[in-house]
Image (cartoon, rainbow, N blue to C red; front, side):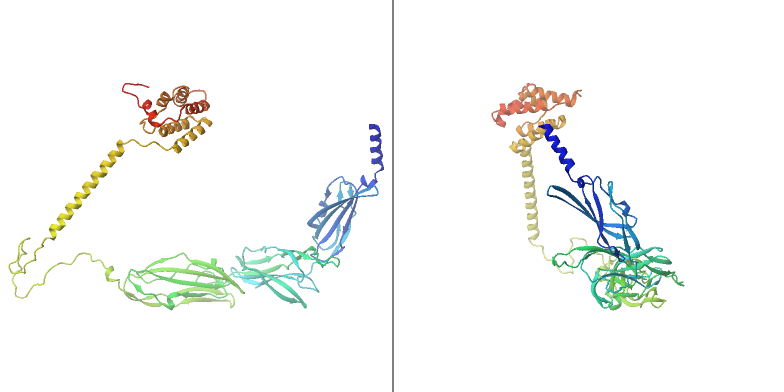
Length: 577
C-alpha cells in the first residue's frame, strides 16, 4: 500500500504543469511617455513559483519608488494549478529624456527591460491645461543686509487633491533667518483662461550678510484624483504627481554708511508712540509714574529692534522694565513692535521738561536715513503730600512772652494747685472702678492658669487608653512583611509597636519582657531575633520561625483583655524576668 501511494505522488508531481516549477516575469507599464513631474505605474506580474524576493536596486539610479503594493492569486482550472503574483510600483523619474526600466529579477527569473520617454522640465508658468502648477516669487530681488525679502509660494490646481506636501525653503549662499507669515491662504485665480484653486504660503527672509542668496527649487508631491470610471462613477483612484518651482537668486548688498553710528534698522517705516504725549498722569514728589513708549516697524522683525534708552530729567529716578516684543504680519510682510515701560520717580517739585526721544532708521523704500522723533514734554510735579513729610526733630514747646512781663516764673511742682488758675475737677469714682476691674482680670487669669496646670498633671498621671484594634492589626501586618523579607530591624520595630498596642499601660516595652510573658516557643524566637540584632550572628536571620511563633501564641489566647494581661508585664516587687 505504501509503494502505491508513493508511486501516485511521483506521477502527480511529474504530471503537474511546468509552470509549477518555472516562473515567468512580465513588466507592464501604464504608459511609455511621461511629462516632467509625472509618475509611472509599473506592474511586475509573476506566473509560477518564484525562488527569491524581487531585487529593486537596479531602479534606484533613474527612478524613485514612491509606493509599492503586492497581491497574489491562485487558480485550479480542469486540474491545472496556476499562481500569479503582482507587484505594483509607483515610480517617479529622476531626470528627463529616455530612461529605461531595467530588468527586475525574482531570484533567477527576470523581466525584460522597458524604455520610457520623459519630457523636459519646463518653467512653472502654466502651459496649456496643466492641472497642477507650483509658483514661487521673491520681492525684492535686490535687498540690503537685514532687510526683508518676501517669498510667496502658490499651489494652483484644477483637480482634486487627496494629499499634498511641500518642501520648506532652504536658503543657500548667505546666512538667512526665515519666518513663516501667518497661515496658508486659499482663493481662486485664472491662468491662461482656466480657473484654478490656489493655496498661498508666505515667508519673510532676512539675509544676515552681503552676497547672493540662492533659493533652490521647491518640491511638491501630491496625490491627484483620476477621472471617474464609466463602470463605477463613484469609485475614485489617485496617482502621485510631482511639481517643482523655479529656483530664485537675490542679490544682497551691504548697508550704507551711517555717520551717527546708529543701530542698523532697515524697514519700510518706523514710528514712535508715547502714552504721555496724549495725557500726562498726575506727578508728585516720591510717587512713581509709568511711561510707555512703543516702536512699530513694518518690514523688520521685533527681535531686531533695540531696547530704547529714554532720557530722564536730572535727579529723577528711573526703573526700566524688560521690553515686550511682538511680531505681526500683513500683506506686505512682517511687522515688528517693541513696548518699553519706564517707571519714573520725581524728586523735586515744580515744572520740568522731559527730553525728546529719537531713533534713527533706514528707509529701504526710498533709500534714505530717517529719524523717528518724540517731542519733549513740559510737566509739573506737585509737592509731596503733607502726611508724607516726617520732621527730623519735634518742635520746641515754648510760650510767647507777654509784653511788660517780668521773668517767667518756674512751673509749679507736681500735685500743687495754682492760686490764680482755675480749679481742676475731681476725678470722681472712675479710678476706683478701673482698679476693681483690673484686679478681677488678674484673679480670673490666675484661676485659669491653675486649672490648666491641674489638667496637665492629671493627664500625665493617667495612663493612656488601650489602642484601637485597627492599630494592632497594622502592627501585625508590618511584622508579617518584616518576617517575609527576613529583616530583623523591621521585625523588632513591628514587635514593639504590636506590644504597645496590645498592652498600652505597660510603661516599658522590649523583647526580653515580651518573651518572658509569652513563653515558649515565642520566647526562643525572640531571643534568636535579639542575637541577630546585637550579637552579629554569622548565619542570616530567617523570620519564618518568629512569624509562626506569634501566630501560634495568638491562637492560644482566648481574646484576653488588656487588664488580664497586665500583671505579667508589671512584676511584683523583687520579681525578675
